[in-house]
Amino acid sequence: SSIVLPIPRGTPVTGCIMNCAWKTKYAPIMWQLPLVDGKYNRFGDIWSGLFQKRTLDLFGGAMVVNGKAAVRHERASDAISNLERETPGVRINETLWESLWTARPGSSLIETYRNVTDAAVPAFPKDYAKTFLKARDEWLTLF
Image (cartoon, rainbow, N blue to C red; front, side, top):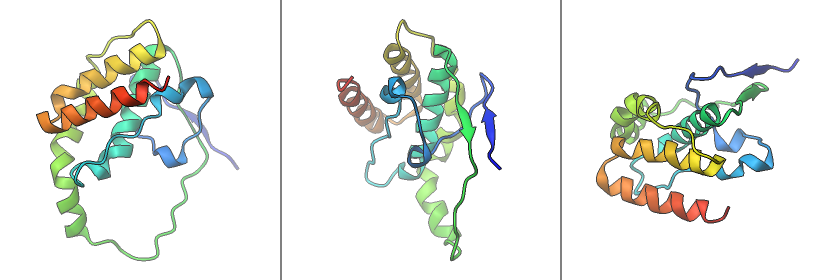
């Protein structure tokens, strides 16, 4: 049996880019965050999904969960090691959706996405914000 679950507007949801399918017109918002010295790497999928969801909310699109997640865990991970890797991003992660709520729709999908990702910048430390904006802008030039 399959699962098809539309995510209501205004509801945050994360999306894992490696398990994502989309219509071609949505390719500009499928950007994956830059990996910087391992600092926020474990949050890339989470934050990318939040940006996608907020952009779709503002642009009138829909995000749909279609299918079941399937992960085969063959061993337990090291909880302390995971905590150490996640610590730099925890505070940002806890408030990012609220930051994205300040974004407003644009006249196009790309402009809306730019507005959403611009709204995230104040939540990031300055060094990461600079890298984030440079990488985002390079991505968007492809479209």
